Length: 418
Ligand code: SF4
Image (cartoon, rainbow, N blue to C red; front, side, top):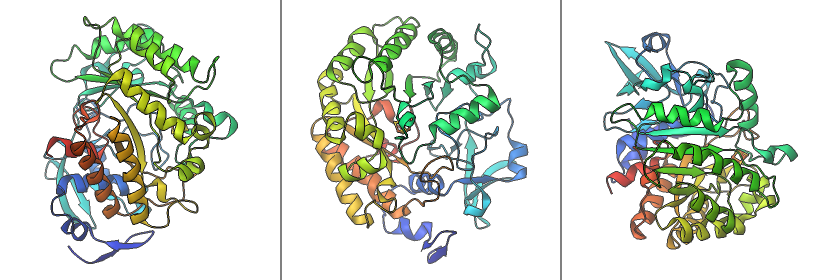
């Protein structure tokens, strides 16, 4: 349906109208972006149709949801082409898409109109088990489509002197999760090793693992203690595998060459990602004050490029929170300007072997930017296409962060078809 649509925060073109401007862009990936951008509300009927014995429900996560509630709702929706939509339950007043259950199937609706049939991820077998120390395995390691996610530590030291990234809610969410679910802030290497050993017994499901945590600035050199912990953890995980290296991604602070070499040599880690979050120095300094203070924008980029010498081309990435560069009052004033600046910087990194993936910015209630609004669908479509075009131009793969492994980056979903 073409024509302007009045949303809670603004008037904007309809989904179909935006997609008509981008005939080359896959409609279902456009839908993924829009659903992530606006969130979802589950009807009572849909909630009752979710079967905890069959469907994968949200497990403890590093960031909170858009409604600030921890509830046993589906981890993700699945579209008919295999695209995952990791999406937050969102207050109905914010005009989200609606997930309903009609005639024995889950459906995505908007304004009372049927949009798509959706499915839910199946629950992994290990989610019903506990570690020998008595913790539910689903609290230790989460599952993505074909990847195991370890959120090994959910505290970020940038928050200690009030320099957390302004879009981030890690610390309030950690406190809430500890209070409501009893989830420990830090995972023990032994619990992680045991859970991964159990998870990979399930035939045909998992092909890689990813470790993510907040930054730890302590140590002789900044981040030394963070690296110490990851070495212990990755060595424990390595005991599960027969090969020296195992398919893995560490998503962490921007380490110096000595720290990166230590990780590469002492563990079986095979890829390294360090999120720069915003690809513009001025906006980075405003939005990510902790990263700016401890490493700096140019330093962060340099460390990513140095990592390519150690982990190899195609095995180093960075993530951005797509759209946060337009936050008010200090963000870019226009989407065109933001897009051009972001893609220029992504190209600088791509030329040097670093690939950039994006997520859709969700203004979360526990973050500094809780009352802001993400940019237009049109902006995200252009951003995602631009990032994928750079991968094609510079021959970069994104296998460790694609739709099979992660499922959270609409731009890397494009890598399977272009
Ligand atoms: S580095 Fe920034 S985004 Fe990451 S956990 Fe810390 S504050 Fe949050």
